[in-house]
Amino acid sequence: MAIAALTLFAALVLLAGGTRIVIQRRRTGDAGIRQFSARPNTPQFWGHYGAAIGGLTTAVAAPMADLLGLAPLGFLDHPVTRGLGVVLAGLGILATFASQLAMGASWRIGVDTTEKTTLVTDGPFRFVRNPVLTAMGIAFLGLTLMVPNLVAITGFLVMLIGNQVQARLVEEPYLRRLHGAAYTDYASHVGRFLPGLGRLHPQPHYRR
Image (cartoon, rainbow, N blue to C red; front, side, top):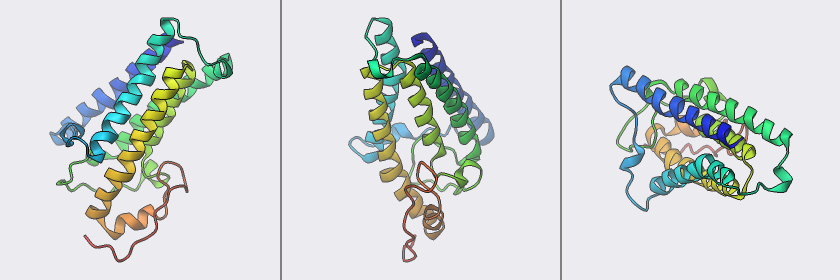
């Protein structure tokens, strides 16, 4: 199962990384990569590297540890659990790529606060404000269940914390500044990662 987990992670990198970047560059002339410009010790820095390190720990270090003989956690070591992991990982990968495509020209990895992008509220964004992060969470939960050892679970939790930092402390403040009442109204009706959960209170007094 460790080899299958590594293979699925490679598919995620190929689709959500390589293929999506190629599409973005062909459509706009820009790859859409912004996260490496984050200043050290800023929320975007910690959000990006927390999610990246956690993701690599789950998707690469955990399967490698499994191949080297690290025992899985007994309460998760079951064929049904591992099979569910395969399903979740596969669906999460496809949903990640589909959500990225739904952003069109507004798609970015990371935030450049000097840019002005269109607020996307259709497609999967009708149900959650961060469908890419939600889908990636599903994919990495699947990878964790495929190789359910302590390394995978630790990496998964670190990735989730990084995504929370990125969404709450980087993207939401940026979108509030950029789109003002349009964003706060949207966010008051649509959940952050899950439908109906994490909605923001409207702030009609907020100005750009």
